[in-house]
Amino acid sequence: MLDVRINSFSEYKKAYRESVENPEAFWDNIAEQFVWRKKWNKTLSYDFSKPEFKWFEGGQLNITENVLDRHLEKDGNKTAIIWEPNNPLEESRIITYRQLHAKVCRFANVLKNNGIKKGDRVCIYMPMIPELAIAMLACARIGAVHSIVFAGFSSSAIASRINDAQCKLVVTANEVYRGEKPINLKGIVDEALKDCPSIQTCIVYRRALEPTLMVGGRDKFWMDEMAKANADCPAEQMDAEDPLFILYTSGSTGKPKGMVHTCGGYMVGSAYTFDNVFQMDANDIYWCTADIGWITGHSYIIYGPLLCGVTTVMFEGIPSYPDFGRFWEIVEKLKVTHFYTAPTAIRSLAKQSLEFVEKHDLSSLKVLGSVGEPINQEAWHWYNDYIGKGNCPIVDTWWQTETGAIMISPLAGITSTRPTFATLPLPGIQLMLMDENGNEIETSTEKAEGRLAIKFPWPSMARTVYGDHQRYKETYFSTFENAYFTGDGAYRDAMGYYRITGRVDDVVIVSGHNLGTAPIENAINEHDAVVESAVVGFPHDIKGNALYAYVILYDEFEPSEQLIKEIKDEVDQSIGAIAKPDKIQFVKGLPKTRSGKIMRRILRKIASGESDFGDTSTLLNPEIVEDIKNNAL
Ligand code: WT7
Image 1 (cartoon, rainbow, N blue to C red):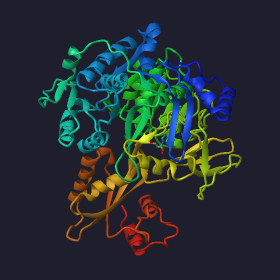
Image 2: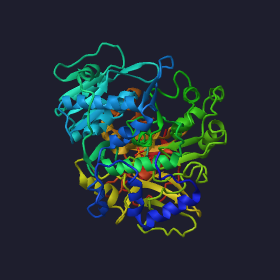
Image 3: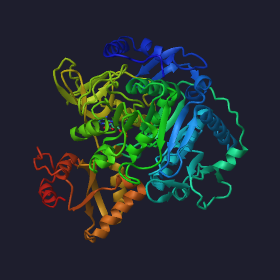
């Protein structure tokens, strides 16, 4: 827990005011809460036109000394991680701060023994087991940059991420358990590594006793390497602005962007927001159901909670196994006090019989959280009434991979909540709403709707797109002058509360996962029968949005179920199952502007069953719209 906890709404307002009037003094005070080897000499320097942002310049630190070492004296025997396996009959694992420290140090030496040095990139492709946390912190310990790839991604998705970052080593597990049947993770990695010349070593954790094919000279078992490694590993001294990790997020065009987060600013931002949004007491138990392969898992399963010295739960499985009561069974078993999940999970659980909820004692719960997409009224009320029993504030937290930490959220128990509103910006976060001409809509405006931007830097912002600073500039800093563009639309009411209305670009949030439509179209276009395709999102009861693909076939191909399956397989192989379209409609053409740009607005409306398409006069081929509409699925 930090000593910069906000305890009342008036304290929030005061902190917010101070953070705007004097941002440097505000963040200085927070940064001073941490262990630094050497204090920074400049709090912030920035230039939106480059764009370049530097926080705590000259400061020297190692984040793992803050995550681990600093807790040892007083809280060494406190539980850092409670791991809950996929199979409820398997034992949980309890890992104290001291044990976690020891394992991280030992695995850090494993990395060193395998030639990894400060600045090298390490890919981690692992299931939700404690070794994933150990591997990421071990990288941070020696100053290697971790690039975690969600273990649901396909081999070609891993390969492109490994190649983009030129990773030298990959850490994986032989199997992953999620639900009924195990998945051979190592097999997927082997496939990926056929195209990854930069990889020298693959370390394999044996999650299952299954025989595992090992490639000589490249593959090594985690256990054997740990047995050989030294226990002691002093932390590497890092500059505040040195990279801590890369995490890929899909963009609306081209390949995924490797967002680069830094040691100092990310530490300060993730811990400060965790502490204030969740408002935990020392003995509370916190559980975020996300996967560490996403930013939510980075910031709010590992770094935020462990920096604050609390107990964090890691769950290997899925909400529906062995039945739809699994989340609630775990809450009861571990006496979880703070529970953080995604609207898509809430919606899918709300569809099930209430018995799954009612047979469990949820009285330990104090605070509920939501993240990843707008939460609709119905889901909000179900969460509030049946899970929180009307007694738990819901923190609807808005943020992004790029922001590193929560930007807009109620502070639990302090900010009054309102269904579907992420409410107010955290101290230090200066938002603005922009109208269609790119002008700021004044804050004094009673009610406003526009595009959401942030007009002042904050410590946990991503500093660049790995290897492509130009793309960083174009994507986030070219839409508006001297501001970061979020890609989201938002509504602001008379109280200044924000509600996020969704993406305004070609990114679709499916089950809380950020998917760019362009890479999916590229995958579909790989199929020999396909001339061109366009993918859009449409509203879906459970997933929030699902994908609808419009596909043009070459003349010699006839639409068929078989073709639909093959196209879905293309997407599965190139990106992963989460990106498979729910609907595929074969069309004769796509509505295009004279400049050849697909009019997605129209396709989105058709996919959502709407018929008012607005102005279609700029279309090159207006006749195609009727045709697509008449054959819509
Ligand atoms: C996009 C970022 C940040 C963690 C997970 C997603 C949407 C996120 C909310 C929320 C409405 C939300 C936005 C954002 N989003 N949280 N509370 N209310 N929308 O990270 O994959 O980088 O996606 O998720 O559209 O831009 P991500």
